[in-house]
Length: 339
Image 1 (tube, one colour):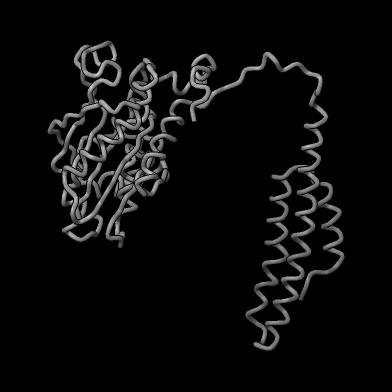
Image 2 (cartoon, rainbow, N blue to C red; image 1 turned 180 degrees about the horizontal axis):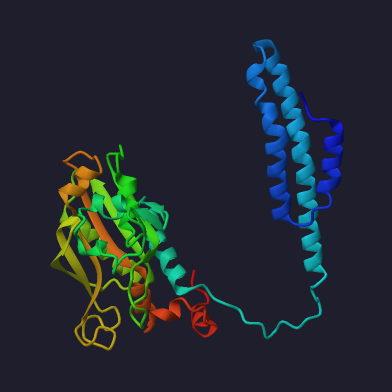
């Protein structure tokens, strides 16, 4: 049994009286549940011969109902646009209007992406909400690891958190990945329970670099990092040094310092007169990470993590991380022309 025509005619009059999108969407949902869904439920009672004809009639009816709501939605949007036009003063002097610039964080992300695109890396951002599995478990951080302490991490519930690093996205991508070579960078906001000050923030940006293949080694890691730093800081004279460190997901692990891009290692206020600047952490994936991702045990994974905010502050001479997030035109105006 189809809908009585009087119901459709009354619907049309009612819908044309609605003047906002949210109300329109709610009424469409209510009407479909009350009148359309029950008709679809009748299909199961039809014979095979009747189902085709009945189905076509339902589709025609559904299209008619959708058109009633879609036509009103278009009218609402047109009315809104017309209302904006009526508020525009074409004679208004805009010569003193402020013109913003691209945020330096975005400029850095664009440069990072451009470098890795040339090397055929997959570039992803991923979700900022992560499971404990990908943020901790698959990265060799057991339940007693300090990073899992509630004083350090924003927990939504026991197994769901705001990601503390972008490696959580990479861990998900490499899991059961059938490719002989995996090249991916993941970037975006990460969250930790830091007190906000000039050099710390509860939210900051990070990029995670993963390159997996059977025949990789530390020389490949150094080649990748060295060339990236020269590209990003626009200085071919940059040198690097690798200091042994510890990260649970890499073995061996390295802290990477670069020679100061401002003074070429001679010593200045940027490098605190040492000639060196610590810029990132890196290493070769711990075999447990390869195992957790269900990859062949002979696969070698290179990994590096970079704080985008930190290298942005270094590059542009910004001494307070809060400047990156305050949308201060006095700061942004210094970066006009950056892409």
